[in-house]
Length: 164
Image (cartoon, rainbow, N blue to C red; front, side):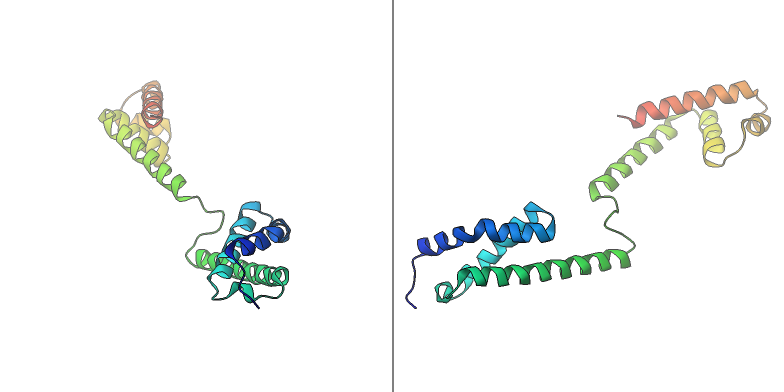
């Protein structure tokens, strides 16, 4: 078979692009992933030593699409198994969410450290250790209303500082 020019090859590929991408999209449920897979199929085709030696480009593209789908699903299954074995799932928070949560926690810890000693102790005893306001008041020999006031101040301050 004679060698076709790259322009003829590109034209032949473009003739079948929408059809193959639609085939992939229906099976994947994602337009972007379908386009990515089609692009990789074309890259593989063009890497061949003689891509023009194909007698039926359409049949080749469909077979390549079926193979790409198998590989994609196999890779997804492996990824899910690795994540599961590591204690994660596809629904696990994204890295950005984890980093943001850690930053929020660091701001909250810094705000708590800035509180006056008694206010910090009351906050920790009540919110972390679950001790009642009455028991805290008795422990520090102060009124329950003072405990309530200090808790309100602490929570307001921490909320304000950690929201920045």
